[in-house]
Amino acid sequence: MTPISGRAVRRLVSTCILIFLSAAVLLPWVGPGVISPRSVLHRDNSDAYIFWQLRVTRTLLALFAGGALSLGGTLFQALLRDALATPYTLGVSTGASLGAVITICLGVATIGGIPAVWVGALAGSLAVLVLVMTAAAPQRRITAFGLLLTGVAINSMCSSVILLLHSMAGVSRSFSISRWLIGSIDATSYRSLCIFLITVCIASLLVIVQAKDWNLLSVDEHWAATRGVRVQPLMLIGYILGSVLTAATIALTGPIAFVELIVPHMLRARFSSDHRVLMPCSFLLGGTLVAVCDAIGRVIVAPNEIPAGVTLALIGGPYMVWLVRERVS
Amino acid sequence: MSNLLEVKNVSLRHAHKPVLDDVSFIANAGEFIALLGCNGAGKTTLMDIVAGLRKPDSGEVLLDGRELDEWPRNALSQRVAHMPQAVRPDLGYSAEQVVLMGRYPHRESWFDSPEDHALAHAAMERTQSWEFRNRRVHTLSGGERQRVLLAACLVQHADLFLFDEPSIYLDIDQQLRCFALLRDEAASGKACIAVTHDINLALSYCSRLLVLSGQRLVFDLSVDEARGSQEWLQVFSRQLELGTTPHGRPWVWYQ
Image (cartoon, chains in turn yellow, green):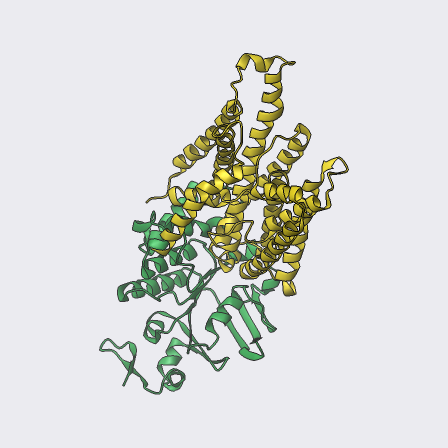
């Protein structure tokens, strides 16, 4: 296959933007119960409430959560030079899960007006971030291999503590833990949504403007260093930004898996490995994918719902198998 | 005026074993230097140190009289280009994308300019790799990949070029082309240092030979000096002898 020309790059990015925007406009209309466009414009109307307070916030959350996770995956894959790397590989998201599970076990509902689970998730991923950084960098030298090994070790430690807490929790708490660990998109208040969107947008922009550096780093650390990159600070910044994207998302949605594998891989295989194309497109398509999965989950077994994490994993599982087969052959 | 490159008393130990011991040499514009030595003699380590990728335990490396550490990374990349022995074979980038990365140190902007594309095109024509510009690196053969890496290095338009076994994997015709190309670069006012195991290529194209043995730099000879002595050949093998081709060129053969 041939990589694409400059004009094709522009066409690809604008197509992705168009897909993302159409998802934002169309998906709030999807759900059990038809909402007429006219009723949405009236203020005191239950349909208007469902549309503006539930479906619109939920769609926006899904779009930006999927985008952040997918971009985070692309970033970690460049950092670790491994196409199978994800924020999960490095323990950041398991740390977030552990933090959330601890708050569920403690039975705390809110801390300072913010849902306690969010605070727990953020604190958990921050703790893992600090732990991996200090453990992986003796003599203050960060290498991809060191990060990977330390991340995997901390990941499995956090997972086993989660299992332990899960087995010791009572029935109702055990249910909320499992529910949280699946990962789902729920309606949120506009206030928390705003904070989330601003965080994700700033972190994503900071990642995407350094796309050329990610290109170099994804080849080799020496390759990057001899082409003007200060490798150590770049790896540190990348790891922190990736963790911020992941932690902010997981705090609101729980660990939604596979989007960060499917989308970058599809883009790399079909279009280009150049991070200047790959990163914006992964964000846009990753967001759309999660929002579409969430919309499917809303209607397919209505009035019940399938969490977005489940729908995605059902699609992602077979994709992973196919990916491994491709790699082997 | 200071020398382009000055390596002064460089030593490096790894796991309590010396890798390089008190190595010193000078390189200037117009020189094409072959860095020779047996396996494990420290050639790649020395190249990495000169490229600023590793720090020596003692000694210093000066570029234009200024220590490597004091150069900002980007400014250094505009002056020194390094061609590694290999890159990951599973790279998903196209050959042209890899070559264009050599222009990154020269450009702040986010996109590659038409000028960058023109320079990449010229460099790839020189190494005869333009024909597979659109193929992904992981689909290239070893020799084709090597020609892409060579172009990626040339396009950096540095003053000092460091090549770690540039002719490895190349067929004989391409080996000759590669060394002729490096000789042309040196003739145009650059300094080239190439690690190689091919003594005949070194004698035919280079202007100077550096021989590493037992972690030390044991010979620093101009090619003319090397023609007049057999002693340095003993570093490689006792079976080697220096002769002359019917055209009067030096030729090393083995019994």
